[in-house]
Amino acid sequence: MPYIGRAPSSGIRSRFIYTATAAQTTFTGADGNGKTLGYTDGEYVDVYLNGVLLDPADYTATSKTSVVLDSGATVSDIVEIVVYDTFSVFNGTFTGDLTVDGDTLFVDASADTVGINTSSPTRPLTVSRDSSSSIVASFESANSQGAISLKGSGTSSDTAVRFAAEGNELLFFVNGSERWRITSTGNFKAGTNGLGIDFSAVTGSGADSSVLDDYEKGTWTPAYSISGATFSYGLQSGKYVKVGDMVVASCRIRGQRSGGSGDLQLTGLPYATSSASNLNQAASIGFTNGWTTSPKGALTGVNNTIIVFKKSGSSSALSNITDDITEADVSTSSTSSNDLILTVAYVAA
Image (cartoon, rainbow, N blue to C red):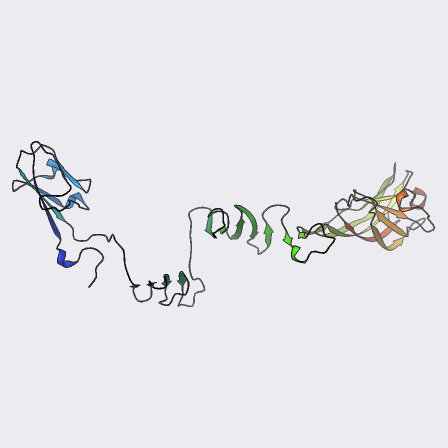
């Protein structure tokens, strides 16, 4: 029957007998019978000098490989060291399969696989759970992040690719940095700005980017602007959605003009428009009321947050968008005047 440690036939006591040289204090290595001294605990060592048991205060037994007398022995003295060792930790190699407590732990030597709670592991490590609990294994760390790393033959280090728990959030690390996380509320969040979903597998011929790197929605405050004028508003309401570089913004605004001269602008778009030359983007006017002359068309500016307006009969070219609705077309009647509902979809800078 195999044992981990000493088999009962080996006994529980080992004797090492040395013949001293003149003034010898240290006894170590092979004794007179070729046995090498070793022990696991100095408390379980007895030392005899010429058959007389020495007091532990008369020698030191701490190194586990030697005994040192406080006073040197006389030539030809017999030093006998008795080591009591009821159990020795196994230090060697197992061959063949290993089974511990049924299938609690099983090593399949022929397949080089290990099973926990299974005697039929199919992978280098197979862990099975035979209860109703869905948790198969648990890994814990005293660090604020408990991480598991993954490493292939080309991975630079065992910290390059890993996933971790931080609080109640799940973090994903790639190339050594956090790239994404699932928040405690269930949202999928980029670790840094500029990260997105890469659609390059289906890129069109004219695409200069295939990464969807932004989604947001919010509110914005539209406002009228004419040089030298002030406006008193009855309503200023705006909402927007941004997907990548595409912004869809809508608003309703009404207000009373006081003074000023020049062309009318609507300011406050949530993002600046593209800086591409001549890329004025059309806005859709859905409703107007209470204007001296109602606007019929609207265009964004270039690389700014304004919209300018056109009125019926205007022959201005797009490159001369200053010939727009002017102060004369904007009512000064009341804060319910110059009512406008507008939606614009544009490419942001």
